[in-house]
Each structure stands twice: as structure tokens, then as C-alpha cells.
Length: 169
Image 1 (cartoon, helix red, strand yellow):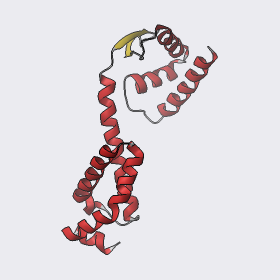
Image 2: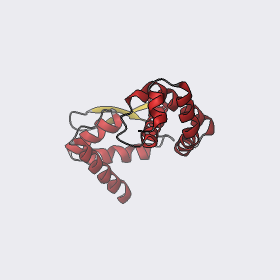
Image 3: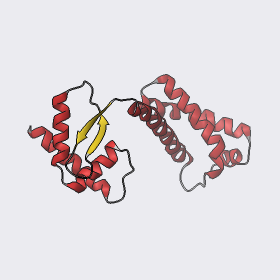
Image 4: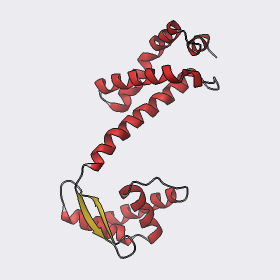
């Protein structure tokens, strides 16, 4: 393990400052590539080094420090993206879709622009799926539930079947 990292782990502020100066340009570059927004990238770079300051003691040295730091950076950017986009998902208007089994009526996000033909096509495409695929798709994309081990493949296959259904129309 690098001596600078060990010193920073033991509480040396000068060692941490040296790590910051050494890795800041590449962390900023990664954040900028992932967000496309300079201001957001700078904020996320600061968030990364704040988290690093709190978590540097957890670095075990089984990988390169830069690899560990860049993994931390990508996780922070992804969490920020999810946080920003989960707010926008909750703010949409809802329309009911009717199915023939236990998912009788579901409120789903209204596609923008409000296109009744598209809404009808989506409802037909979802209804055309076999029950396990329909349930996996609805649980993941509409209800926002986490995918379980077996439902990931069903969700994937449901998307493939929906794409095939919608492109043949």
C-alpha cells in the first residue's frame, strides 16, 4: 500500500491534501464525463473527497488506490443521478391501465406528450405479455420494486417481447 495512503489513514492532513491534489484532476474528469455538466461535476468531486476523508480507513489495499477511488466516484455520481431522477418520476401525472387479471387497474406515468394512441399501444403490448413477464415488467418499471434473482431475466424478456410487439404495429 502506498505510504501516502497509509499516512492519510492514520490521520495526516498533509498526506490527505497530497492525495487530493494528485487525484482531483482525474476524479473531476470522470465526473464531467458522467454528468456532462461542469458545475455538477465539481460538486460531485467535492462530495467524493468528503466521502474519501470519512472512508479512507476502509481501504484495505487489495486493489490500487486509484481504482478504489474511481469506483467510489462512480457510485457517488450514480447515487446523485438516481436521487435527481427519482424526484422527476414522482412528479408525473398518472393514467389508469386496465388488465384482465389481478393487476386490474394500475396507475402508470402518462407519456409526454399525452398521446392516446401511444398509451393504447403500450396497454395492448403489456396485456399481450404472459403473466410472469407482465408481472416482472410492472413490478420493476411501474411499481419501482427491486428485481429479484429470477425476475431480472423475465424483465429483460418482457422488454424484448414488448419491443417486438410495438415494432410490428
